[in-house]
Image (cartoon, rainbow, N blue to C red; front, side, top):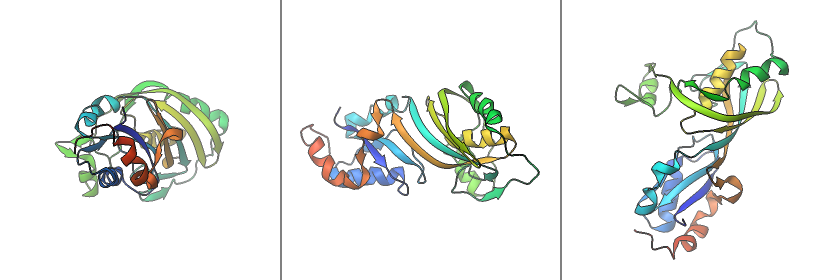
Length: 227
């Protein structure tokens, strides 16, 4: 469907910034996206343009996803990513060997209970968790069942552990970084993240964010998009 497109979001802009840019480029008010990418993350953001396309978002967010992530060990973050306050893990702890890292990473392949990050949009007592976290109140979030279909170690050179993750909906890669760091006894946070695929939409075929004002209007002009 022409009005459901993948845009490659760079680091910096929010997912809402991408939606606003699409509105300006197309003149269409009804625009939505299928799954937020944090400002520090980059990669595939599926955008729906027009009322009929946005009706498909509830299905699109359930599609499988692939990420390439860098987990930085030996340091923690109160947001579980590079945006937060970074704290070096107190010594003594030993740097885990590749032989120690592999089984810890692989235990996250399959279905397991994951606690979302405190700084997330998951609701706690009717409020988004990040509202409470920003106010200095630690939200108590319940574990949720999530599935990682495959996980691969691409590189491990202390302190950075680079992974490819193929997962179902609802997986927080920030939580994965936090939990792997905790299981290794070193602490860890998500230092870099790229979403390389959402369902059939891949990064190689995504439209570039800085060209959408040129590429989008002719792409949707013959598709009777509602304003």
